[in-house]
Length: 109
Image (cartoon, rainbow, N blue to C red; front, side, top):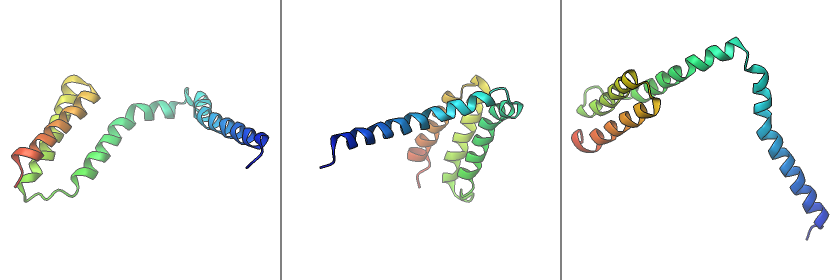
């Protein structure tokens, strides 16, 4: 059985490393907050990420089958809700609900 002092030292080192690794991103971001590049990316990246994810998801759809309509209708609902309400959570949940509902009921072949 290891010595008690050794176990306390190991626990202290683990605590210090965990705290440092969690605090480091906040310390690094403090100097970047005034960066013009970071401000530009913070406004453009969410839309860019959604476009990339949408294209990646839709890239393998078989366009000759009827079941392709469920994800396309879900995408249209997501875009429509976002343009209408400008609420990302509502858009994603609404589009997902429509896609799941259509996939599980209407377009099953």
